[in-house]
Image (cartoon, rainbow, N blue to C red; front, side):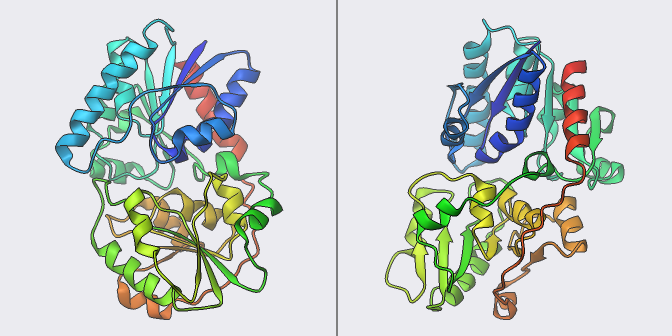
Length: 337
C-alpha cells in the first residue's frame, strides 16, 4: 500500500513517526507532505524523513484560515496526484481530507481536542481516531460524527513517549545548571481559533513572577516570532531561547517544570512525570480533564492562581501502558481503509 502522511503542525511529526516506521517495516510505501510552520519541517529533517513542502502560515483571521485551508488543499492535490496514494493520514490537518477527496483517496484523521470544528472531518474523512477520554456523549455534544469515530486507549503521546531517555547533551548545549530551577515556558497559540485572551493575562503574571527570580532558568519556546519580544530585556532570571530544534520529549526531560498555554508539550510533560502546568483558557478538553483527575496536570484558571504556584522538580516516570495497543489499532485502521 501507499500511505500519505500530512504533517500540518510540529507535534504531528512525533505522532506519525512510529506509524511511518512500522508501516515501512511491514513493506508499505510512505510519503510525507508538510506545512512549513512551527518547526514542522525542521522536525522532519531531524528524524530523517523525506517530504514535500506544501503551504505555510495562514494568518490570524477566520477568513485567512479558510482561504489558506482550501488553497493548500489544491496545492496538496497538485503535489500528490501522480503518487496515487491508497490512503491518507493526518492529525487534524483540514487541507488533507479535502485534497484526498479530490483525488478519491480515503482519508483518516486523528486528534485529541474535541472542540475543534469537526465539519471538514465529518464530511471528508472515512475514520476519525479519538482517545477514549473523549466519550461518545461528548462527541455528540461537540458535533463529531460518532459513526466515523474509532476510539483508542490512553493518550496519543503514548505512541512515542515509551522508551524515551534523557539526552544530557541538551542541558549542556542550553547551559542548564543543576543548582537552578529549570522551567520550560510555552506561550499560548494566539493565532488558533480557540484562543482565549485570558491566557495572555496569565502569561503576563507568570513572567512577572519568573523573571524576577535569580534561581530560575526559563527555556522560552515561542510559537511566533513576535513572542520573543515578551522576554527581551534585563532580568534576574536567565532566559534561554533555543537556537535549534530539539526533540520535545528529551527537552522536557531536561526540565524541572513545564508551563504552557495548552497543547502537546504540557501533556507530554504530564505523561513523562515532569510537573506540568497549563494556562489554556479555551473550552476545556476531556484529555486535559483526565490528566488533571490523575493528578498529572495542574491548570491555572486566572492570574491570581500564579501566586500560589510552587516551582518544583519531579522524577520522570514514563507511563508504559497502552502504546502497543494504540499503535496496532491505528495501523489496522489505516490498512483496512
